[in-house]
Image (cartoon, rainbow, N blue to C red):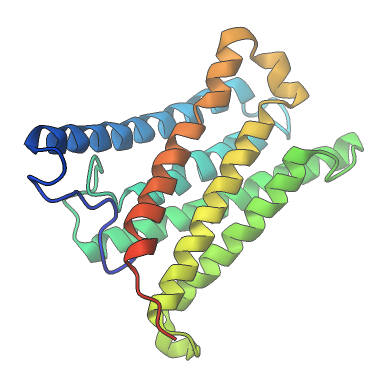
Amino acid sequence: MPSDVEYSPLPAEGSGSGVHDFWLYVWMRRFSVIASHVIALGLTLLISLLSRPGTSLFSWHPVCMSFAYCLCLTEGVLLFSAEGSPFCFKSRQGKVRLHWFFQALLLVAATTGATFIVASKNVSDLPHLASWHSLLGVATLSSTLFQLGAGLCLLFPKCLRLPVSPQRLKLYHATCGLLAYLLATATVVSAMFSDWFSATVRGAAWWAFLLLPLFPAAVVMNQITNAYLPRKKISS
């Protein structure tokens, strides 16, 4: 979600309750971003291992979807963070290119994952859209397409000649991105209640899987709402 300002701005040194609180704030933000990177990668790898890809058509669905939404979507947002991003050495334009790279990977992986689950249900003669997980999945895919559409408008504003200011387009893109991320998190969490996952993971491990996606979601939501949306002045 490219913008004219970096996400997660830090408060001015010496403000608040003093220098100690300032540096505590810095390290807490840095830790939260780094932890989000680790959780995104770890959750993707764990779900992929539990899925045993190749054993069935369905097995590829959680692999592709976790790669798309747990990893690519998270990294596509957090690379703009000022704290803990592995791409902090990149220029603004370089980060925008990486953002689009992650978005392209997300689209390919999500489309592939959706194709596998549709094919699996057709082969097994099971009904489509029969659970909250599937309904949330459709909503997530739809919001992802809106986000990509707003991003394309930002990428080619002169070619499309839209009667909307770039500032408003950036706001639309960020809002759709936040909505897509929150819906993706809800979809991942709802998958933990599926028969497949409940039979595979039990006990304390199940609770850990249930809570893990919530941490990166909180970091991403805080990054966008507190550091991007309030700072943009919307012009018509």
